[in-house]
Length: 310
Image 1 (tube, one colour):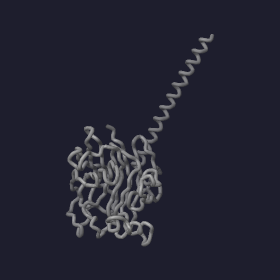
Image 2 (spheres, helix red, strand yellow):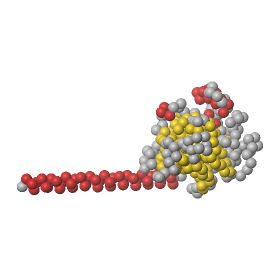
Image 3 (spheres, one colour):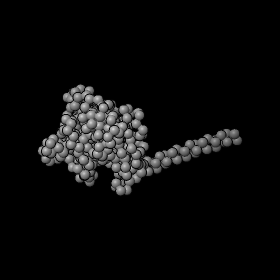
Image 4 (cartoon, helix red, strand yellow):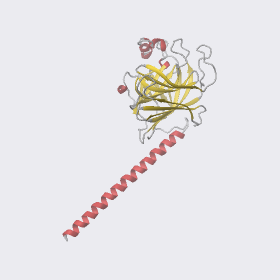
């Protein structure tokens, strides 16, 4: 009788364990399906019909930001001081998220305002780059708090105005750019489209810049005074980058462009940092991602990062 009772208890325990396992896996599968459906809905949503998941938790190795929540994020000197869970405004004074669109400051700051004064008294060339502190958006840098290694990154830009500053840093290298494996301001890759119409892949290593590849895709001849911007104004343009480590110590970088805002991504440029040719070792560690623009009043939308499985 005692043995029979123990046997029944044993079977009961096995039944309970198997039931818990079934419930656990069924819940996870359902949760994953819901997450994928939400991401798909957001990707396919229009600016007039946003789904409110601005601060979508990084899950399934995807991060998506469609600026559906209204907020203003102020620049901070250190990433850990940023009040936003996902973003750090490294330069540019403010990021605005309004009605499904992210943007920089538009137009000049008010004379005597906090950031106008601060930028007017900045170090090195900052007062000149920001036209006396009135245009901090001339050096806009938006960095993700999360860090990524092998990943694709994309965003849509819409230039509202190109600011014709007299500063020497307003030049052909300005553009719509993406940070990749950002270690700090002195060590990173960046990719994108410049105002001279060229797609570029560059590396900043120990403060020096190295060009890995470039290709012109927008027609026209750049001239700082007569033809200072070959990129479209008031039109959405998509830029995507892919970065991954290959052969253990090299980095492969690709750039795609959606010129017509129709999800038709064209592979335009690719390069490999072999760890020898561009100033030294390839940047192999995880790093931050993000956005850089120069001398522009500009909008952003549908920013996405997705891990590349290797």
